[in-house]
Image (cartoon, rainbow, N blue to C red; front, side, top):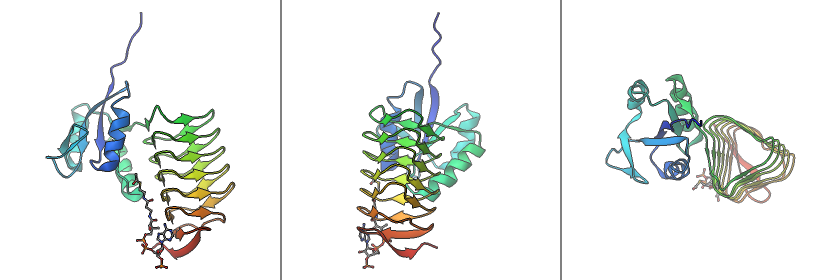
Length: 215
Ligand SMILES: CC(=O)SCCNC(=O)CCNC(=O)[C@H](O)C(C)(C)COP(=O)(O)OP(=O)(O)OC[C@H]1O[C@@H](n2cnc3c(N)ncnc32)[C@H](O)[C@@H]1OP(=O)(O)O
């Protein structure tokens, strides 16, 4: 006798472009039943999902038995704060892992992580909670990506790369092996990181140089 668990009723927190990509992944997940999105414009839809209204609805949704959520907001600091808020309300954050991504042996994921189509994550890499590994990015062996990071489309991180919490690597960033990028950094699209980047730096270019410190 087989028992099939019912899919978890899940709300997507966010209703923009990133939410659309997350909805596309989660709608194919047999463990997830999407009930709608949270966003400012209730007349909008996200891939056919209803936008229910703003964040103030979350406590009531939880009381109605919606116990699972995904925070789909591109901005790292906002996503991090909203994820903590949702968890404090009792929501369990699901992961959105595309079936078209490859996760090798020993990869560990936190909660509320997105891994988009075409990604390759190699052995023993750790991806912290609320982080986004966006379309076609690769993170090679023994990587350590912190919490609420965003590795934008087409980034390539070599082996043993560390990225601190809330750092953003713009589209197509390349990082040589063993590099450390600190917390709260912004790396410009197309950069080549060949030296460590201190926390709270905006760095751009090939090779990447620090342009300014972020407050
Ligand atoms: C699915 C998705 O869409 S995910 C989203 C993916 N998005 C991205 O990858 C966006 C990446 N963003 C960038 O590259 C931005 O240009 C940033 C964040 C690096 C900088 O943005 P801002 O803070 O607005 O800086 P601003 O545009 O004023 O540029 C500052 C300086 O850096 C230079 N610069 C900015 N971006 C880059 C870059 N990617 N490469 C090289 N130089 C750059 C500018 O020319 C400027 O130089 P100057 O001071 O000599 O004139």
